[in-house]
Length: 382
Image (cartoon, rainbow, N blue to C red; front, side, top):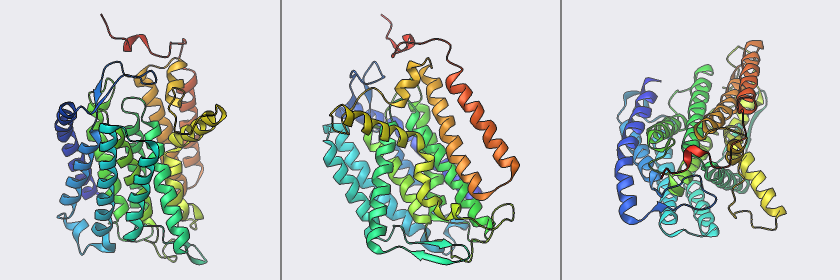
């Protein structure tokens, strides 16, 4: 775990430093988020946070190649698959940079997302097989595996893009999700006596670090936005890290959970359920947005100002409090899924129940007054 901590710190430090450079480049090239009716910021904010995070991910990858534990005989092609993910991530980040500069149409961005997912499939980073405890393993047909890979990647990328509506929201949600999946990968390997070095854990440690390094610049009031270069990169790497875990464990390895109980199907299925569980808030927002816009006769990608984070502000939360409460929901679902998949017993479920009650209380009971859609504190002073 110490080497994963090093990866986390390298990604965070490099991202933090590169963000200053990325902001300057964005200002010089005109990659700036202008103020629109549906936006929450009141002054133009530069983009290109995704470029800084990509730099942090690459730096963490290069350092990890020289760490004794992770680099020992490269178990399970850890760095080969991670390199493929970062190369495809660089492609999707570049598409996001073009969008930040030129405002590409939705279909063009969707095509780029599919191409990036296709690169993963081309180099074998895809759903492979799933071990079924007590039965054997289920190998996915190539066509089905490819389709599931594309759907998972595209859905996760767009879910992160949808939730990127408040300062620090997307980077916090993805950082929480990546840290939860890192814990899952590490504990699943440890409890089943498998090699602790895995591509998924490496990518998640780097991704969590990149989010942590970017957050000081992006928390309200933000000095830099990640833009589509960042939101698409984060969603892509998170989805790809789940893909790399499938097929890592033989069917006979998943014998017990953390409490000695027989293994269930939940750890086996978590690589599929992971993006949905960790990103349940943005996925719910995505589904509701599609329904809402379809009922109005609009295309599903038509922007509006009725996302969940907007409604949090409407019921009385401040900008920062709304972000932190959504983080709390993301942590509840992400870590709750991980804990439930590895452990069982009354203590675990009591902990999750208390966590749920506290989160509900903070969401609905804390706001004392109904504030306007744009809080007074965000209106520029004259």
